[in-house]
Length: 160
Image (tube, rainbow, N blue to C red; front, side, top):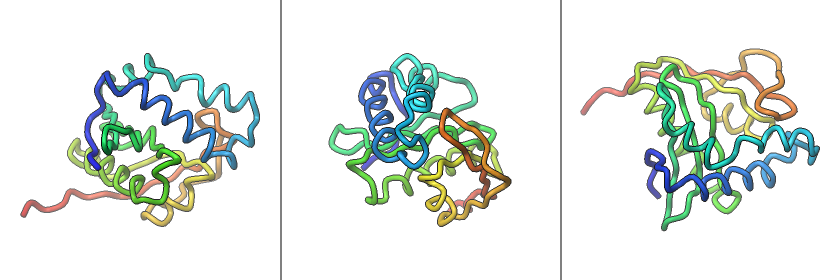
């Protein structure tokens, strides 16, 4: 598996993967509510993907194996993780852990000392297990029923 910067040619497959991830893995958050799903899925389009890809101050990464996109993640230079989704086909294979590591490393490269995010109910336990702490009560976020504000201090690793 390789984690790399997204390119325009990734847009269609990445959006299909994002939509599957939300539909299949985030049921605890959207509860199959068509209004929540419409909001959450509404910007998972190739045009939006390419806008995210070229957005100043942000990095859009994909995890790829044998030409298939396994995960999509994004982080701002200020250290906010704005996307982190895994394909249902790659769940529990360490792909999400690797993506979070890549997002954290990118943020540190850009000068961040603290990562922030709004976790879904689905991902909340994962983030806690990876050193993130909750910063307050759940709030509406990204079309999901609620998002849990979380953060984690990060430091640059010493060069060897």
